[in-house]
Length: 324
Length: 280
Image 1: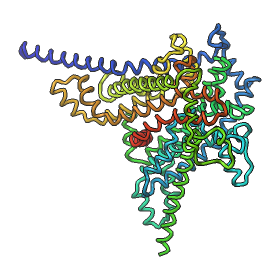
Image 2 (image 1 turned 45 degrees about the horizontal axis):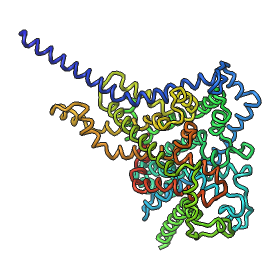
Image 3 (image 1 turned 90 degrees about the vertical axis):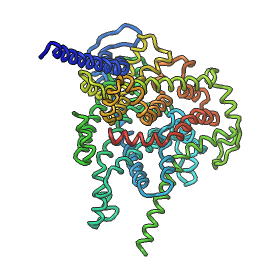
Image 4 (image 1 turned 180 degrees about the vertical axis):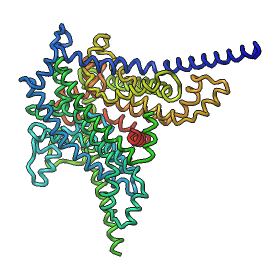
């Protein structure tokens, strides 16, 4: 090899290396703004919260390290433990009422919307639009609808049916039921859209095959569509449960946690402890518990939706590419 | 013959149930608007009146008597400003990061991306207290940036944009390189224009999310002058409690821009949502 040829080969190698380095630098440059923000406001605080949860601190005065005292308080010690477990109980009651209601109604609506009907986009819009509305504004409207006298429209309706009127937001359990109704109204459009997406991924060939084998409409739904839909159903189930643990604004606006704390869910309890009582340490321990619950639900979700792979071939390859 | 008739019944019930659903879902909007157009004397009436008085006094009184005597224009301006800047920042950051994770080769790329994906499991509520402390130490409490910067990057947005950029064929980039195009120029003049529909969808999500946010501004903005509309409306509820004519007028005002925006872009929004769900 001549001197010149070797020289050429080396420069082209060096050029390639410089090009690679330049590309890598561009890459780091492109991800740096997002990474910086996420580092400051997501990654660091999710470690920091564990540290704060070991303090007795009002966010202004001096910090006192108390170890796991806050966790002991919320799990076992009066007066904290009864409050905390009560908020867990309220959250569970809320989930038990709202999740089955939302899933049943939105599944029925999604199945009907998937039929070849006219005015489909009109119906879809009408069902979905509540989901995009701001919570405080719509909470105000529903407070007026839930007005406790017979002048509230819901009570007026009950009165017309000769049913007793209810002091919705000021009695237990109607206050929690009112919140369930309001939140379901707000969320059902979202669940319906997700169910429709799930239903559209069920292949029509399978349904046709079942029909040829003599299955009727009901049989096709329960034996073909429903099992294939289970990842979607599970996804909505988990999303709604996570939403229930975090739910704050409707309670804050409509009931302030009352009456007698009967609507104090975990999300609202966390807010009160942190930003009304300024017990940063204790509230951080509540936040960590909230995280534990939501993390467990997320893991369940991931474990289950991993089975999507088993059901739908096309998504499978994509999921694998993601993992690689 | 009998079969045919049965089929008709099922169609009838489909329309019936969907119509009832739409009526129930839309009724609160109707009730809000007619209550806001009623005189206080007709509001509390039994049986309820379903046709309004078309009385605009509530709007007048609501508009001239805002919370803390600060103009509603100010609250609307605050909301528009916060939502717009958050959207621009978040979409820009998500787009460049999504592109980098999809198309640019650099060491540790996949590891960093997987790590960021893991962040999606952390509920924002857990970060309220530490973020409050961080903002306090930055002396950012009671500032606009406190309501903008922390929302200026989202893992979901990065994920969405990465998914899109991955679908661009590599040949495109190779051909551009042959023509002497740098990766920065390729990104801005070829990749981003192709991503316009995706960018629009992402912008809608971020904008609506920011417009509707409540808990975070409630905590970090104690000064009413920088309040967004939702927080101001909550304060208005405290000031005018039980004045349902005024309150529904305020709610109508706060909701109208969102509804208009949504009606214009509903197709992108709903399709973006179902696409996200299928992929997620």
